[in-house]
Length: 449
Ligand SMILES: C[C@@H]1N[C@@H](c2nc3ccccc3[nH]2)[C@H](O)[C@@H]1O
Image 1 (tube, rainbow, N blue to C red):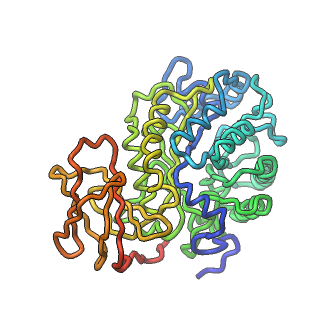
Image 2: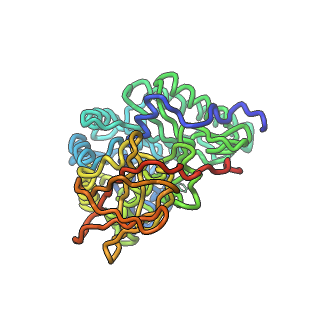
Image 3: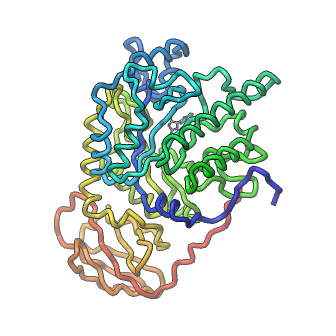
C-alpha cells in the first residue's frame, strides 16, 4: 500500500442509520432543471441532438448570451407539490436535484454569486420549495452539485501557471462556500451528488475533495457523499491508489449498469446507477424522436437489475422550462408506480441474494428472513420456470401474488416452478421460502486498479 493523505477514509459498507436509510431507499428520481430547459436543445431554429444541457457548447453560444437566459426563467407551470406527488406515486424514496449544473446557474439564492434564482422573474427559492414538497411526501432529498462551472471566471480545466493556481484557489473557496450554505440552509438534505470533477484542476487538488467531504459531514452528520467527488494524492478518482473506494458509494454507472455475471464484485460496496430515458438527454429536450426512448418496462427492468446487485437506481426527469413534466415521463411514473404499489417490497430494503443470475430475471433478497424474491421478465413458453439454487438449498414454499405455486424438483438444486397460465403484462414476482444451502461463495478478488 502507498501512504495516502487524501485517499479512502474507511473501507467496507457504512452501517449507520443514515446510510442504511440511503441504501434501503433503492429507487430515486433524478431531476435536471436549469436554464438549459428553456431552449430545450433548439437554438436559432436549429435542433442540436446532443445532450440538451450541453446546448451552450454544442451551439457555441457565448457565456454572456447563455447567461441572459436567467432573465427569461419564469416557470409558470411549476408546482413542487405536484412533482412530489408524482414521484411518490412512482414509488421513489429519494430525489436528487441539480442545485447547480455545469452552466453555473443556482436554483437557490446563493450569497456567492448573482447567477441565481433570486435574480430571475420567478425570484423565489425553488430549492426550498422542492425540499419542502418532497420531504412532505416522505421522500428524502439529495443535492447534485457540479464543481465544473462554465459561468465562474476563476474556473480552470487545468492548472498551467501561477495565475491559474491563484484563480483556482479562489474558485475552490467559492465552491466550498456554496456547499457550506447548501448544507447549512437546507438541513434535511441527506446526500451530496458531485459531478463535473474529472478535470486535471480537480485531480491536482485531491486535498480539497477530502476537505469538502469532511466539512459536509461535520455540518450534516450522516450525510452521504458519492465517490465521483473524490481524488486522492495522485489524482486517482473514485477508487484510490490502494484500490479502496473513496466517498460512501460508487457512482461511476452513468447510463449503464454492471453486468450481473461479470461485474458481481460491485456488490462489495454501495453503488448507484443514474439513467436517462432517451439515449443521452438529462435536461429537457424538445425533440425526443432523435434517439430511442426507453419504455416503462425497460426502465423497471433496470431498477430490478440494480436492486439485484445491491445498488440504487436514480431515474432522470427533465422538466420543461415552464415547469411542466412531459407526457412520456408522466406515463413512466404511473406505469412503474402501479407495479411498485404491488411489489415495492422486492425493491425497498432489498439487496443482492448471492445466487447465480439466470435468464428468466433477477433475485432480490430482503434484509431479514429466509425469503428470496424472483422478479420474472422472461416468461417460459411452456409455463415451467427453471430455477437453479445454491447447492443444498431446499425451497419450502413458493407463492405468486400470495397464492402457492407448484415447485417440482427436476435435478440436484434445480426446480420447475409451475407458472399460472395467463398473459403477463408486467413482471410477476415469485416469493421463495428457501432454507439451507451455502451462500454461493460470491467472494471476489479486491479490485486491481
Ligand atoms: C449526471 C450527468 N453528468 C453530466 C455529464 N457531463 C459530462 C461531460 C462530459 C461527458 C459526460 C458528461 N456527463 C450530465 O450532464 C448529467 O448531469
